[in-house]
Length: 326
Image (cartoon, rainbow, N blue to C red; front, side, top):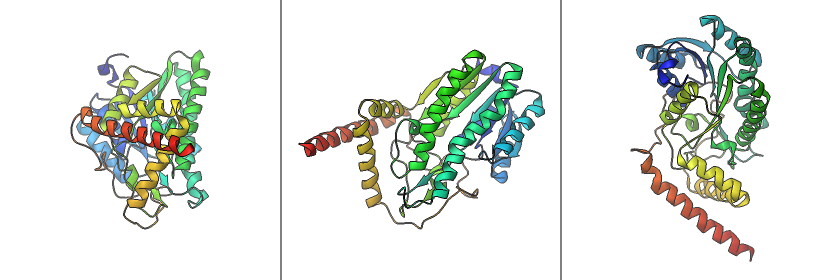
């Protein structure tokens, strides 16, 4: 299935399809007249996405699902398979965010972040794998993010989930080596311009914004479509993603300190805001578009000045930390 046009008629499940990258992916897949199963907690938003996908030529159904509920995910996989009698690709995408000092953020929030961001992917894959094994083929696409390599200070639960996702997926790939037509594709986008940060549980007491550069979620959607047509084990979306992975691999201590430094500096300067648990426990009725309004105009080359800025800042911080040790 190396040609994108071969996606026509394929049945694809997308979790977290109500907003952000999931919504962008649904719209991108719809252009190829696919059969889409749209899953998330927000039924109203899912129905909007369904209508938009149908206008683009796709067929779509909506299944309200909490990915943290393993039984609900089994029901999702079975209903999706029954709809067309087959499943071709499963996109694990649903995720939530929580920011705050680890000890000041309720453990219930940390647990829910891990339940959604880690166990949600595991639940979905556990539900769909028997179907893929029975039919002899299938593609699992995991939106892991660069958070699978780079720790996020004030997002300890999120980091635990993302690091766990990477390890789980690598183990799964080894296990599935006996099934050459079942693929696991991991995507590692850099920071995206989605509403996710607006939905985040916020225990910092400060307004949250993504660190530049932020990338268009449509770029991730393109990568998801490409993975469904031509599976690849690991894909990095945005040059910053690969840069941050390499930085942490080569200079783990320095990179971790740099991320902490950047976060400390931002939170000291950010405007105050009331504490909130966002959409961690319940869906919200705002910010359900593909974009969050944090993006930068222009092509990917427009981010080069920000990448250069990150490199210069990192170098300066590294020199400073080394000098402090002497």
